Length: 446
Ligand SMILES: [Zn+2]
Image 1 (cartoon, rainbow, N blue to C red):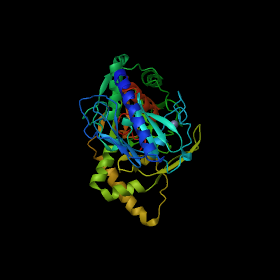
Image 2 (image 1 turned 45 degrees about the vertical axis):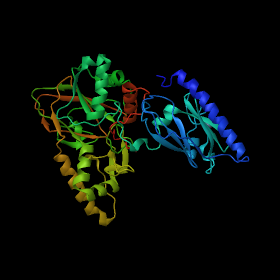
Image 3 (image 1 turned 120 degrees about the vertical axis):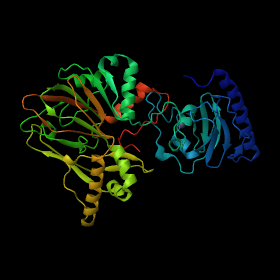
Image 4 (image 1 turned 135 degrees about the horizontal axis):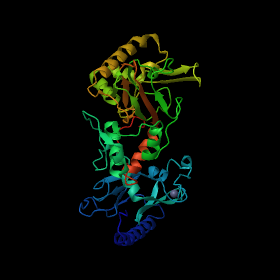
């Protein structure tokens, strides 16, 4: 959708030209010294003029102030753009390669004392002239969507998705996924609630991988367990999951730099004679927030103490030796939680100074008690043809012990990379309309 109507563009180009002439004239009157400060008396933004191009309101010593009319996303405000920031973000063909949109400008060569000489609106861009003899341009829509303080403001657009807590689980029928609105619902449930259940899949092996390819249009994330893994009781399990023992809540493959994003578990067989074996999900991010609230000092310990997660196993077809050190909780510059890691089954040796050992284990126990008592816990039985999808970066999963005197419990699973999922969610739900504020997917992005 083109936001600016051609009529507005034409009239604005005319006014921009007169403004440019005036600026140049002013420069001449100043005896050749470039004018770096001029202002226009447009402090009141008429809120009714939706989508009208912004006013170059104030040309300050170190920044350019643009007044955006209501109707622009985030409009109805003035935003300041530092001169140097604008130079770094120049979008002209010399600075960004057309089509690939990759930056070809070498930003390290921009002088630190760079300032703007002139700025005016032309078409859907602001044209900028800097003291390094560069004349460039930046798209207006991009500027209003990416102003400096964008992330400090709460996104009030209808496009933003907020995390929501539901007592049950969203359930969808496999056949419904032929319709695009149900695919959208699938994405939204995973983003907002962290999980969804799909009923009625065929019980043929390999269906789970085909589901990822058909519904998400993505490849599965291959790991040391292959593309698709079978979860069923075996005599010599290479993983506790492949036995009938209780599987305490955990996240998978936290010894990877990028642990799997989505986990899909598809039930192929679950005989009536099997006792127990309920699947369990717990919201790890919710637990981490509770930890911050109830035990702030211990929360800080868990944010600052690296622990070892490892998978060292030589007696398997593909011997592996993986070790990764990270804290249980990762926070960003605003102290928001961006990552959570919990997998007692895969903890390796704890390396720390002697004085830190006790305070770490104390914090660890408190976190474990919050996981056990979490009100977000969901417990349910999988039936043949059921598929659960959950975010392995924000939710813990587990399983109650079960007995298999005669029957079989057989699940097949696979993973989807978290960044590829987030990208696909953006493309499917919103397209290139706006950078959406998703609930945090747990990929540690600040
Ligand atoms: Zn440029």
